[in-house]
Amino acid sequence: MKSQVALALIELDSVPAGIFTADAMLKEAPIALLKSGTVHNGKYLILVGGSVASVGMAFAKGMSKGRDHLLDAVFLPDIHESVYQACMGIRQSCGSEALSIVEMATVAAILKSADAAVKGSNVQLVELRLADDLGGKSIAIYAGKVEDVEMALNLSEAALENKAFLLSQSIIPSIDPELAKQLNSSTYFSATDLTTLEQGE
Image (cartoon, rainbow, N blue to C red; front, top):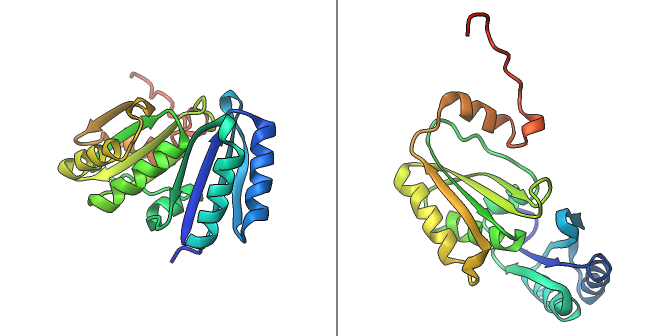
């Protein structure tokens, strides 16, 4: 069972404004500052959690204080357990099933869309990547049957108010075992296991 009932994320284009906004949010209500800091392209992210009432109050304060530098934001009063776990950096195995992968321009967009996707389809959320080493973008990977990963993409897109945040997406009906092995290790190029060529290949 997740320790936080609600999550909220605010994404700003200014570091000073981001730190100022985070401070105001923490002073507004008893919330947990799960993560805050800079990501690529100079954005500042604030991820908080707690009770629905407290996070709602802090989110409203943050939206007010950071409005001049706001890029995107999301308040999830009843976040799905798998999305919460993925936010905390927990990854799942993709196995040998079908995969769908979606790439978005903001972290708030991927969180909102992932929450809708896993609540409305029978998929496993393999991984969320939130801005770091992605040029400020974000990705979600879903595993399951072909029709289920397709549904996850449809729900993901439908959840977006700003369709421009959806950058690209793809479906792989049956993932190659070697690629699945690499994805299960990491989606970071520098962190995946290096396979050397056998003599004669």
